[in-house]
Image (cartoon, one colour):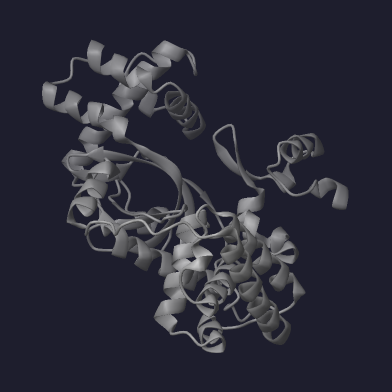
Length: 368
């Protein structure tokens, strides 16, 4: 799962050349005359230059047009392909023989097969997975690599989250397979061409149909939560059901109410690791299927449908129980000057700014 050494050396030559050019244009870190000088800069400096490039991506076009380091046409074409970069947060969930699996922390999930550069991923990230990281993925000769800079954060993953990540990984493989080249649009086009033609649109449901369906579904949810969970779960499940009812057209009028009720509870349970034994209340997701009288594959499929429809992801702050908000890293982890940090460790002034922008639910310093 690592580039051969000659290819790795070529990648660094090209990447350092581009970053040197970016710094010459933007003067992020003073005078850096050669790619070799860029390579000798400390990690923090190289990261600042990389982040400056991400804000001024048109510099890639200027680099290709000017070719300041007189690269051969083949090498210049590799740099030109980097316009198809992917930047984001990922869960590294597998070390396979060919590549490491970077699972994009969005919905629908995408599983990228990424090759390491000079240091294997198991040495760089450690042997224990999953790991949460922020990375920049780049195409390189029909493969995907990262740019040599990983921003990782140490988070312990309980059994419930591990299972939910495995579920997302299976969903990603089932939808697109493991993506091993960029741009992603090429893979999407291939999948769409092989897909069956979409069925004809159904008539729009009437408002009274949606209202009646919502009442039945929330009634089922309330009864289940009273017996197996608590009012906090019931309130969040009702919120999710109401959001689905407001969709135009609402999906709640198609399919059986008990299937939707099951999928809604399963979704809230998935976000909050309900099947993690360390949580209270604790319940297996398959027990939800049984209680609502639906098959396991049906309950799992309906939950996936809801998550795709509303773009619900792991650690999703909107669907986290209020009592679990403090334990949710996505609520508090923010990028500051290119580095991930827990806003709770920042001065109160920074927390106030984040709160006023709606980025955090409250000001942690005030609660302390």
